[in-house]
Amino acid sequence: MDKSDDPYFIDFPGRIRAIQLEMAKQGIDAYLGSRLRTLSWTLDAFAPWRSFVVIPAEGLPTAFTFVIDAARLADDSWLDEDHVMGFAPMGGQDQIELIADFIKELLPGGKGRLGIESGMSNYLPEGNLTHYEYERYARALPGCELVNAHTIIDRLATIKDAGTINRFREASRMVDIGHQAVLDALQDGGWKGKTETEIAGLAAYAMRKAGSEWEWSFTGGNEIASGYRTGLVGGACTPASRRELREGEPLMVDLHAMFKLGLGDHAHNYLIAPVTERQRWHADNFIDIVKRTLQTYRAGITPSGLAEQMIGFADERGFADYMVPGFEHGIGLMGDEWRIGLNDGPFPYWTNPDHVYCAGELIICAMQYACPDEGIGFRYENPIVLHEDHCEPLSAFPLRVDEIH
Amino acid sequence: MSPEWRDEAEKRLRTELSAERMNFVTSSMSNVYLNCPDGGSRYLVFRFENGELAELLLGQGEPPTAEFKITGQYETFARITRAELSSHRALMTGKLKLKGNMVKALKLAAIADRMNKVLSKIPASY
Image (cartoon, rainbow over all chains, first blue to last red; front, top):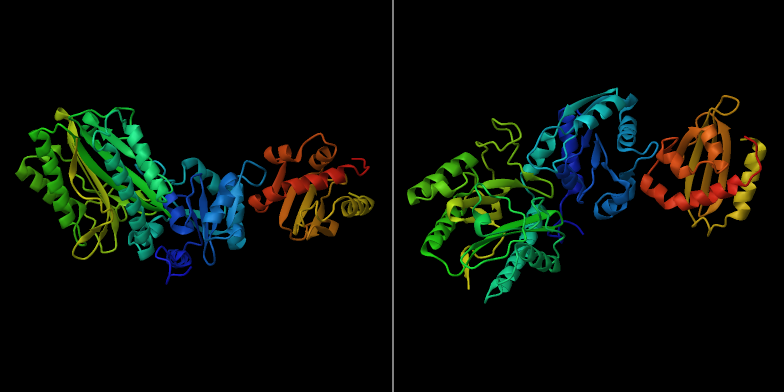
């Protein structure tokens, strides 16, 4: 299928050529990618095991993964089986020797500049080269200078193409199906006796029926919080627990779906009756700040500028104490989470508060409202595409805090 | 690793392994024997086409290019042939080194075992 008839088409060979062009500019002879985001972005396949991609100065890349998964990865990827190699603890086949030998054969005389991916992340499966791997590769490639080059990928991956956005759009549609399934299950007393894990599961079932590949988040798949757990301080991470839903309590449902490495991520909130006026006040505050945030997001603004405006709004309305002062996290094809732009701010590898958003960037509009003293909180997450004068939320589930009776 | 052994190996592989038993495979493999009794190195290259043995080369020095290359000490290969050491264990302990696409090698592992079984029956002294 080509670009003209596949809405999810991504020009992977074009991506490789763009990387090779940047490599040439930076005098890099070969690139050794190890981060999950790099693997997804170049291979079009999910690489759950430690994996690498070697990109030569010209021609096709070659992927390396644990041998038990190499055939599947080749089957999913746009690359043929000659460009997906398996490694295993066998003579000549361990990842260091196999890949180092491969790189030596690529480089004349085994000499050259090898781009690697080094750094740190608060995202666990980031996949930077470990210190041990770095030392082993450096020893195995005595003719090579290893240089940190991950910004090549990060820069190229910042603006999303139509195929990527459509994959996110489809994953978001699946998340909306999950939310509808949860709403249907909770209504008319259906919530009674249900646990957080059960809600996570019934949403997962509905999304998988719709074609979702998995509940991709390393935060425990679908995140569900009820009662006091919705209001934990800064509590934007709540793997589902075995806690049973109770009347008079809030419920937060944060669902994740994946479609061709595109990620759905949308949170919806509930109040289980009876609902107090104070709870409704909190809920209305939350809905109002989400609406205002979505109205504000567009190209040209910065994370810090937006946060100042929104916290100012919350302060005027008297609920600033309950807002976590962050309104987004980065997103890209599977494995590219948290990063905004190039993460080149005052704290290395963290969001640059002065990053100026551009049209075509895709982020998760994310905010957490938490009042631990009252055991109540709400979360909003939704992938949004930034345009020149507005943002486009991809999940279309109605924005409201539903009261469940 | 004598010419006589090579000729016997070729004869047995042709008669004892049908193309069907060899899964009609088209592939090639070079075994490189380091530190042979005379101190030198030898190679043995097997080339199959559609399951038929097309070529069996015995030589010294750098072997011709093959899809897979297995390198090890002569003594290691001898122990495998005498059934004192499995080829899997030799690979997993690094006594043998495999070069080539591991995924494809996995597909051919059973075939390689069949070949080794035939070769191990050739009377030889090590």
